[in-house]
Image (cartoon, rainbow, N blue to C red; front, top):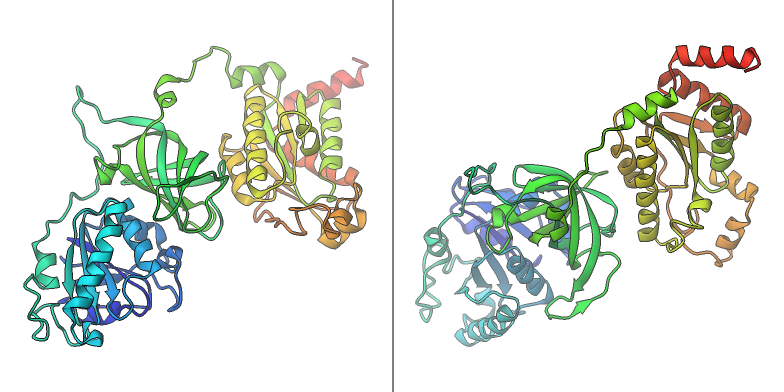
Length: 516
């Protein structure tokens, strides 16, 4: 049986863990510790600083955070540790709400440090009564309350002589009496009663990452043994901690809880979390760091997930590409404003067009006049801006075209999303590299000047970050080469790799040379 111990930095977790009949205990000053009672060992699932009050700190110090979050999901019971001298604090309420949201219903309220309040039954009962009202509000209808003195061992493994008024079980006996839950595994179902399968859901998401959760940003979703690429397609509302109030939200910040629509790239088997925690609870993993970013509780599949199917067509991408005599691909130009992206992309398209290639250029400014005219420049809007362009570009590649995309596209996660929409070898990331100081000197549109003066907010390189590509297919240093030279390098690189076969190039050149 697996259980978690929740408590603030001074609640006595370390002392309590040392008193439990477990071996090889290694603890930090974390706020959330997961103990494996069956194997008689303790595992640290968090190492926040002593004065930390963030749920994210509980998981983010672990090197394998996705594993830590899965272990948290698999807990059968929870011990909420409260310092008797201070009573239930905000952090304890946050832990309690998280336990309730995760569907853990075997809960022990352990009132520790009773020695600091002269083992007072009145103090113990006052804390229990106060928690009972709060617990009802968050859905924890039943819990067991135990007074403890971890320092002196009272009521942990043996009854405490100083608390004869407590007639209940010790903490160890209480834990040993609880039954363990069902282990996670793949899903097997009868042919005449198949498991529920869908690729779009409504879910509650508990966010635990410093970077906000943004609709449209790609994450990995891990549900039991299943892993899929996922995006949050919309936030319905944010839940206000400790109350039924619903708040409008465009993103979820660290420690926020929201009800969202989520989409995955392939159908997965599931149950509603309220019916089956193992097949209804998932974690969201940050694609860049591979760290757990949030916990999710599935409510139900969205109706459109079961009513919309891919229509099969006879004319496919291969036949469209063959009719054009080229291999379709996407050339993704990224870089700071003023780096020369649009200029170079335009020159590349002119050269490809002159060679008989079928192309289309999607430029950041031009797209914002139509398709993305409703978007601003907040981080959330930038994510959606790139998501839309990536999807449009995918359709154009499917049409057999060579698509050129010239966008600042400052975040690696969105460029990764665009890459993963295409087949292997169809995406070329082209980093148009220039130092910020030189980009500011160029400033062809006067944007840096406005950003520096405060007239332009969320401008990349000034008050919004740019995440440079780490391994682009093509790296152009525009401080040392001209736009024409850069365009020639791009054309040479893509012609050599994927765009057209040598035979078609020779045929085209001979046709041009003969005056055709």
